[in-house]
Length: 301
Image (cartoon, rainbow, N blue to C red; front, top):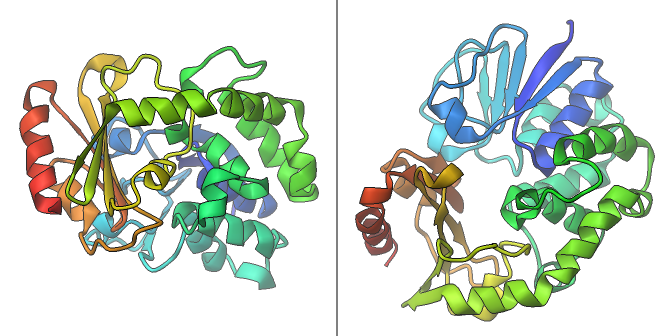
C-alpha cells in the first residue's frame, strides 16, 4: 500500500491517527495544520497524502473525518462518519479495527472521550492519565503560546508517537517533557480561573469569554468555564487570530449542562467556519467581529 504523509491537527486525535498509520507501516511523515488553512486551500496536497480531522481537499489519497459541517462533501476517497466519536475511530474502523490493529481499546476509548468531550466534572477539575495528556496536547489549553519548553510541541508529538504504543499511561505521564507541561498547567491554574472570571459576560444561558484584552491568556482546559457558570449551556471564546489579523470565535456546548440543541457547526459555517454539532469555530475580519458576535449570540438564544 505504501507510505503516506499524514495531514492532521496537532492534538490527541491527530496523535492517535499517526499511531494507527505507523502500526500499518503507512506513515512516511506528518504535517500538522490548522483546519482553516485546509479550508482556504493553502495546503498543497497530492496522492501521497492522507488527511484526518481537517476539511477535505480532493487531491489527497484518502481523507477521514467526523465533522457534520463537512457532511455535504461527496467523494470516493472521503470517509466521513459524523456518528463516530473521533476521526481516529473512523480511521481505526476503516483499516479493520481490533481484528487487524494492536492499538489498545483503552487508548481508542480515550481519544473518543477527548474528541467528543465526554468528560465528567472530576475530569475537568482533577484531570489524570489520558485525560490530562489530551488537555496538554489540545491547542485550546494554550501551552503552545509559551515557548520556554525543553522541546517543541512538534518534537513532543513525535516522541509520544513512538512511546505511547508500548508504554502505560503512567509511564507516559512520567516523561520529563510531559511533566514540564503538567507543571506549567498547575502553575497557571489559579491565574487561569481568575482570568476567566474577569473576562466573562453571561447572557441568559450563554457565557462569552472576551479574551482579546488578556495578555497572556493563561494555560487551562477549555471546559473549566462550565464549572464557574453551571447555568451556561454554550460558551463563546472571543480572541485574536494569528498576529491579530482576524478575530476567532470558538463555540462549545457545556459538558455539565447539556441543555442546548443548537447546531454550532451550522452557526459557524454561516461565517466561513465549521466544526461539530457541539463544538465549532470561525475566523472573521476584525472590522466585522462585533456584528458577527451579536449574530452568533442571537442564534444561540
